[in-house]
Image (cartoon, rainbow, N blue to C red):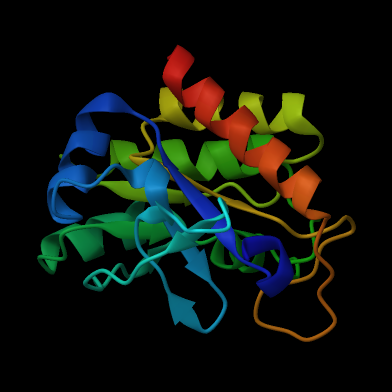
Length: 190
């Protein structure tokens, strides 16, 4: 369902902030949270067709940050978590959200967001993982080292388009599942 709708998978990353993220999500593992365009889905559950189908869970507000200042403002305002938006990172660097900002630039922004806060769980926008499954694994590991509580990986095809605009294309279900496996394996190896 994710590949057909243009969704994304969130995997937990850095241990300390990921445990806070799990607490916020009601004890559910962040690796089981799927966010799909226009809908909010929760933990994946087996169906009679052996495909995983998301079930609804409570929603949480996670304002977007793109640098240390915006992350600190979110924390000081009392929000329980934040989302480091790839769109916001790209815009702050003068680019459209069209895959023009590199893994290194986003990881640098993530480090600044994490270092500016005391314990705020930050979910990082991992874009499409910046390449193939090896790159997805590198993204999850690198973002965990930078302090992300979670990493969102999209199933868009390359070249990607901003998630807010029309004309998006997604990869095949097999490729989307491979990205999910690579992300979860990288998370589990950390």
